Amino acid sequence: MLQSDIITHLIFSVIQFLVTVLANGIIVVVNGTELIKQRKMVPLDLLLCCLATSRICLQVFVMYTNLAVLSLVDLSLYSGSFVIFMYIHELELWLATWLSVFYCVKIATIAHPLFFWLKLRISKLVPWLILGSLLYISLTSLFHRKYIWILLQKSWLGLFFKNATTQIEDISTLQFALLFIELLLPLFIFLISALLLIFSLGRHTQQMMNMAAGPRHPHMNVYISTLLSILSFLVLYLSQYMMAALVLSEIFKVRNFIFLFCMLVFSSYPFLHSVILILGNPKLKQNAKKFLVHSKCCP
Image (tube, rainbow, N blue to C red; front, side, top):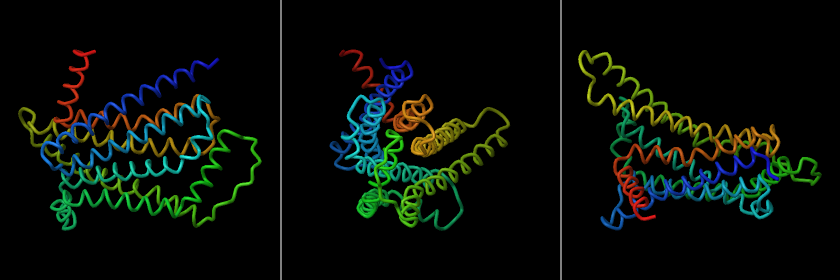
């Protein structure tokens, strides 16, 4: 009989999976419908659509991982598709990074020639950034495929089979360093863009608060809500890296409460940030309300 914490973990995992598919499905359907009607797509909508699609695929793998951790599915079936999971996960990280860069360039005000150049061209660069990310991840995945598989074997044997004695080839320090840099590169770019945007929004908000002698400036609420949205994006993005490091560090036993909690926090990022994106986008928010009203009227 399953323990209560394992049952709770399974329930929350299913809820996260359903909400992620629903929220990101709304983003894909709304932007896809817009593309069919107008025969074109705004660069931001294109980026959001690609990000939502990658998150749906990622959540499918995360859900299967949760089932494997709970011993509800065959672990050997999952291990063969781990390289695909790594590909989708890294693609999602890069797309989320470019979304942060897009927001930073469009919203922040920084007096620098390079920043001004990016502000004028970022919309045209979005399709190339998406295509470049796909090509970059494809090439690095092919180059590191053997070493990713070795890391998978070590991680899986360490997590699920503590007493395993199978001989596994070691990875050279150089290859491990390249893999490490490859995974940290989007985090580094994300942190720069997010912190620049937070600094710029915080400075503008402080200036408005100092200048407002009477009633609150009408744009104050917009700046504060945008600032909170970016801060939540930053926290969720960082939490995914931290939880992945804790899970793979083999500090906690599989099906331990803390291990299951780390898995839930890791998988909460795709659905929580997608919900935040919908709430912060008037078009997506309106269509989400229509969908919920329609689903209530037509059970």
